[in-house]
Every structure is written in structure tokens, then in C-alpha cells.
Length: 447
Image (cartoon, rainbow, N blue to C red; front, side):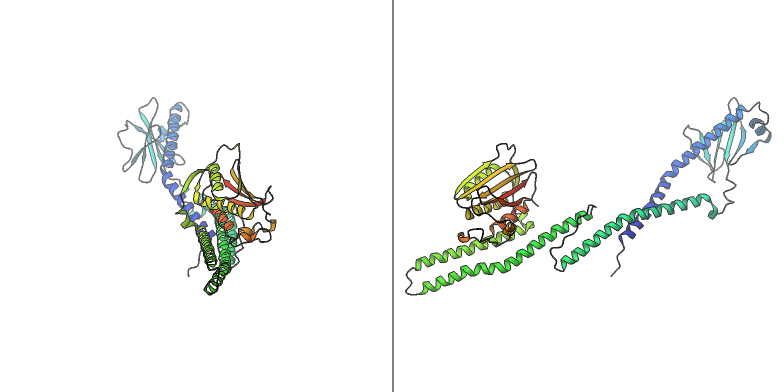
């Protein structure tokens, strides 16, 4: 198995290669610009010398006198000479290329990459020829003693070290966070389902950490639910099956006098099993969000009308509906099937465990709406308010358990609300029982 490279090595190598490539590209495309700048500078020097020559006509030992006496003068990096009766159609050298400066003056470049040009002398028929020559000191200095090369090497080394430091520090922090995340994932894989990644603000580690935590919560919830199902379903089925078996045994007796009642009881027990199966299948579908999204249709509805319709359709006792009179907007787009699962199960729960009164209230806030479902039952103790959303949870001490139910209604409502990005909380109602509050964010989308 090939050994993986460190993040720092990869980033540093790629950045260093990018730096070198950037320098090469810059030199390639900047060579023309630099050449033009050199040409303009060379012509400016020539114009200055031509003007100097014309102005020194009456100076003793001036440029005019010296150039006429010697015909050619050599300076540091160029020579000056005079050319008579020359026109621009003639060439100053063989195998030269012609360029122009920014003022349109013709400049020749010979095979040694040296400049030369002829500039007219004011009030004269002569031209001043300025020819660039090699720097006599360049060839005499070895490359390893050249200060320019030393500067370029020092600049490159400094930039490389600075680049390494700038990359290493953030990469070290990111690498440490990734190692912590890997350790957390390994612990999660060993069965510690409650471990979570620590929050981090740097992208993309932040997104990876949040995604892992969401995945871990979803897996933990599914595993717990699977364990609950594995233990609770046989227990829930045992009671109606035992009753069916007992009723069948009694109905087989020849002296049985209430055989019709026993058959009716058997039908009721079978209906209980069917209801349990339906609820379990519904809860399983809610856990499979991917498949559920393809089957849900998003429709724009009015929350006022939605609450009014569900309350009148589900509740069979005294109902009360309170709508916020100051509500300006109540339309929301959502999968109505999931929204019905949330509100219907809460209304059924309130009717089952209340004492004849179910109250639904709708309020609007700047960022959300709230739907309160309240009953006048015995309420739910604070230490049990999270437990009631687990599958098959029954709080017999705080709720009347004589009305049946398998403890799946609130679990179904909570899972459906989670898919809708809704939140359900439990509190004490002013009626004396429980108040379930649904928070519906504005502009929310199902996850």
C-alpha cells in the first residue's frame, strides 16, 4: 500500500511549483514589455546626447569638438559616431531587426541583441549614431560572484521559506482538527455512538464536522430505534396474540354462550395488530428520507385553514381554535402529507390523554410561526418530556393508559417534523395538561 503524502508537503510542493511557473510565465509575457522599456530608455539617452552635441558647438573640449576630432567616442555602455548624408531608408547594420520606440523612432537590434539608432542633429545634415556595446565588467565576473544572481537566489529562498511558514501554520491547525475528527470517527465505529466532533470555524473542516455530527445523530437515532423495535414489537404483539388465542380457545368450547362477543373481540385484537403494523411501517418510511422525498408533493397551503381543517377532522371532543389576529402572512410550501402526520398525531394525543378539551393556537413571529396543541389532562413531568418522543414510550404514571395506543404517535410526529425542519417542544398548558409547540420556520425547506 502506497504511503500517503502529508497535506503540508502536497500544498507546499504545489505552491512552490506554482510560484516558479508564475515567474516563468511573467518573464515570458513581460519580456516584450521590458524590451520596449529598454528601447525607450535607449532612445531617450540618444536624444539627450544629440542635443548635447548640438549645444556644445562653441564649447572648448566639448562633445562637439571631441566627436568631430575622433569620429567615435566610447562611453560606459554605448558608442557615439557621426554619419553624414544618411536617410532612414538605409540600414545601419546587416541582419538587424527593426523596432520602434513610443515616439516612432526606428531602432535596430543586431545579432548580439544590442541596440543602435541614428538621430538627426538639429540644424545639420548629419546624424548621431548611438550604438550599444557589451558591459565590459559582465564577462569578467564569475556567475557565483554576481551580486544580481545572489539577490535573485536570496529572494527565491526567502519567498520559499515565507511560503512554507504561511502554509504550514494553517495546515497544522487543519491537520490537527482532521486527526481529531478521524479519532472521533474511529470511536464512533467502535460503538461509541454518543461521541460527536468538536465545532470548528474554518471551512471545509467546519462543514465536514457538521456533516459527521448530523450523520452520527441520525445513525444513533436509527440504532436506538432498531433496538427499541427489536424488544418492543414482540412485547406489543404478545398481548393481542395471547388474547386472540384465549378467545379462540373459549369459542371452541361447546358450552360457550358469548361466542359472537368473542369473535368481535378477536376482530378488535386483529385491528390493533393492523394499526401497530401500519404505525411501524409509517415510522420506517419516515426514517428513509431519500425514498420519502420522491413520494411527497410540495404544495402551498394556508396555515390558518390547515389548522382549522385538521382540528375539525381529527378531534372528536370539544375543540378550540385561536388564530393570531395580527397575522399578515400564513402561506407556506410544504409536503402536506408530512404536515398532517405532525399535527394529526398531536391532536390525537391531546384527545386521548386530555379530559375532553383540545385547543389549537396559531401565532406569527418575524422568523417563524408557532402552532400550540394543548389539552386539559394531567400534563407531562419535566424529566419525561424527551422520553415521550421515543417509539413505544408510555408514561402510565402521568397519562391515562386505559385508552390504548402503542406509543408511536409522538415518535411519528417528531420524525415527520424533523424532515420538515420543524421543531416540537413540550411545556405545561394553561388548561392544566400538556402543550406541544410546533415551530415552523419561514422559508424553510424539507431536509
